[in-house]
Image (cartoon, rainbow over all chains, first blue to last red):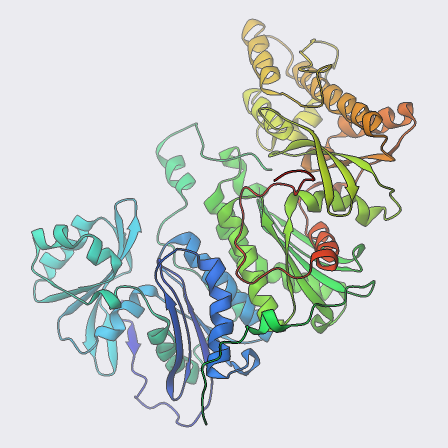
Amino acid sequence: MGTTVGGARNGCPQGVVVLILGIETATEQISVAIGGHEGVIGLFEVARGRRHVEMLMPGVEFLCQQTDIEITEIGCIAVDVGPGLFTGMRVGLAAAKALAQALHLPMVGISSLDLLAFPLRYSDRLIAAVIDARRGELFYALYLQVPGGVQRVSELRAARCEDLTADLVARGGEVVCVGDGALRYRDEILDEVRVEFAEQFLSHPSAAPLVTLAHAKALREDWVNPWELQPMYLRKPDAQINWAVRDGGSPAVSRP
Amino acid sequence: MTHTFRTSLLASELRERPVVGPDTVVLGIETSCDETAASLVMGGNDVLSSVVSSQIDLHAQYGGVVPEIASRAHLETLNPVIARAIVEAGIDESRIEAVAVTIGPGLIGALLVGVSAAKALSVAWNKPLVGVNHLEAHLYAAFIEDPSLELPLVVLLVSGGHTMLVEMVDHGRYRLLGQTVDDAAGEAFDKVARFLGLGYPGGPLIDHEATLGDPTAIRFPRAMLHDGLNFSFSGLKTSVVNHIRQHPDASTADVAASFQQAVVDVLVAKTVRAADQIGARGIVLGGGVSANSQLRTAFQQAGHDAGIRSFLPTMAMCTDNAAMIASAGWYRLRSDGPTSLSAPASPNLRLPLLGAG
């Protein structure tokens, strides 16, 4: 609650050169960026195919090649820690952690919902960042503009669409919704509350805001080592949910 | 500074094919099911370290492996397991010449954690990636422990997901001699153990219970015993269920022992027959079920009686481990070269067989 996202311009040391590789795979898009004190230097994004493990490392290699940066010049690995689609999200997390381990680098983890909200920081509306969690659910969080960034004013939640609209109605005021979850449930949201929707090209978390936000954190040395990084699932594994509500009949498989 | 758009190949594609020799150290990574494992192996069979983190306790209450729980645990455990494998090997990580990883078969979400991490290590260290077939790696478990094994061999591969008889003609060249037409042997153990109320995992629990019972107490069917080299275990499972329904007072230990004897009889008889048919130089046991004590005893005895060399892997090599991945990776890198960084994980990957399309 009340977490500020951004604020890079406020009292950061200048001239410290740290190159950041950002990896983001929490939704159907994969996104890789390299950036630092001069901003985003390169960005590689593909939003169709759901071939995360096939595209991610070739994407990293391609980006390094085009930006003329050796992977060994990278000083920090940033990664989207979710919430998002579990399987895809883990592809990015596993790669980011392994890169940090092999290159002996610190890591910065940033939430997918923070990444959706940050590019909308010039709006004075309430920002609802909403990711499609599948199975009729959404992951969402609410943000307000603050100087240089946005501030999260709700918990990160896994909820149904009606929970989101009830939350927005209760808070009142003008709202802008962003994310693939907002676009998927556009009609259901508009049935309950009047909101604006951000552009489709902002609807997946991107590695561009990831490296921007991570750079600010890296300058403050606000980082973790690879085994301290915690993904945000916001939902228990199915078996644990099922186990809690019924006995017998488990979804488990035999060990091959 | 002028920038030109580079249309040339990526670094991983430009790298020269590595020389693979007796000093080549391969890091193996295994995350296909419920063990997170990493290992350093030199020259294909010198195991410098082998670290396995088992998740059995996490899954036991569900009576089987829960894919999402397995995937989460792999992500959490893999980095420390790799770090420990490097430390225990006692060599600098710069000595690692290739990264081998299980690309299938297995649980897709679990496989992806290992494959994604292995690709990242490959890029970070600028060393080749080698995708390994998990089933093929089980065949290599025998070679790690006994490099003197002579080909051709008949391998009985028995686990929770597979039951097959494979002729290993040469390295990388296999012929399928027989396989289960329904349940895998390990699956039958799990189901019968669940039905008997013994718990999970079924293999070791039935193995233990059987030591208290009489394997000749109940005559369960030996399906397809004299019929080719394929297996069937679903009828046996049904017979066990029917027997207990008709004899509610039957001793659990006798049922477990008699069931296990029926499975072992068929597995061993068909292995020996297969070896006889192809003129094999030896018979080899592999896969998780090869930890079963009755199977090990009977397998060795049958080899002795038939005058054919038998090989039993140690317990550590029966279950999933990364030493066999690194070993198979060494052979694969030597014969076929590196795997592309854009390779997928393949949950239904099959053993590459001779004569198969």
